[in-house]
Length: 306
Image (cartoon, rainbow, N blue to C red; front, side, top):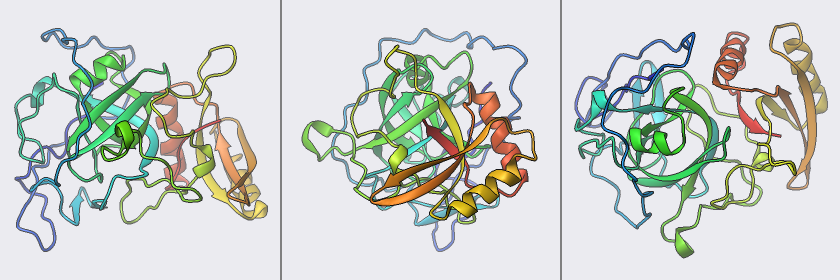
């Protein structure tokens, strides 16, 4: 399944308040998963593309408005990528957009290690880890999107190939910013006691869960002693009051979401109660649960590790 690019260049029809620059909006495709995995398109085989090398760069002249609106949602561009960590579903874009201008004005090259993101400053460097197989890549973010469903990053064809997600079209991933100014361009650390910064429309701020995040590094997602990947869950909410957590869990147990439980942990000296669903085996199941939660009024659900 291919997720259409909804914002691919600094020209077009999505007006930005107080700014002369605009973007090109492209119609999304259906999010319904295919009945069977589809074959990758018949295009030139992916060369042995090296990961992007993080380096200090000035903010791009284009693609960095204070905020912009797409399909009725408002997105705020972050002032910095430091400490940015997010988990969710990645998609990829390829042949149909090769050599088309990105939001920074650079031509999109499907064979380079790049990506599109809704709110990170452009350019930015992130490590993307496929939480389903442990593969990891470093990409340079130079475009805006995706704006379809709950996808959090749109990867180039080359990056998607290295993560082994071309056939399915999507994968559950972690996106962690890399600070080029830090020693050896290490991943941006999660600031102690703070929540991860996540991309969200103005109408829906995600619930934070700093304790669920692994230490900043280039390592893949945690694995059990047996070598299997750590299970993934949908987090529907996080509360300091256990009564609120139990109330949400009880409400959700009336629906067909799957196994629902409340997990409590001490986070920065405070006990937090997190409502979780799962484990979630794949992207279609994550999409099903996220859509059902949205209909139930839970707008801040996100992917979480055990």
